[in-house]
Length: 145
Image (cartoon, rainbow, N blue to C red; front, side, top):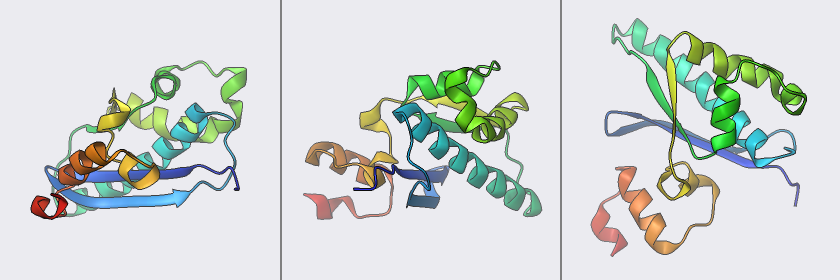
């Protein structure tokens, strides 16, 4: 009803889910790429905070992989030229691009049906839901049968 997108991400350390967040975005997005990019920026901020936490715990993390199911969003993340279409997400662009440029984050494409964060934000078909919920490693898989 508000036309605001629900964003979500989940963070894993190995196979263990250590952080997740689901929330409505504060503003209405003009495109799915904008909505995805805002979600990517939120995940980047969380990953940055976790990196500092692990550093304090003397756990060294190299680059962190950030999966995204939107090709346009991934292109915006690595494109250093601002276009008229991305001016409204400029601050989010700086957050994500900075971490990519210094090598702290590596972005990769993942098809939507494999994107774990979709379990929090979208209505999914039963077979896809079952597959994704098992990958979260938070539930006994026998319950889903």
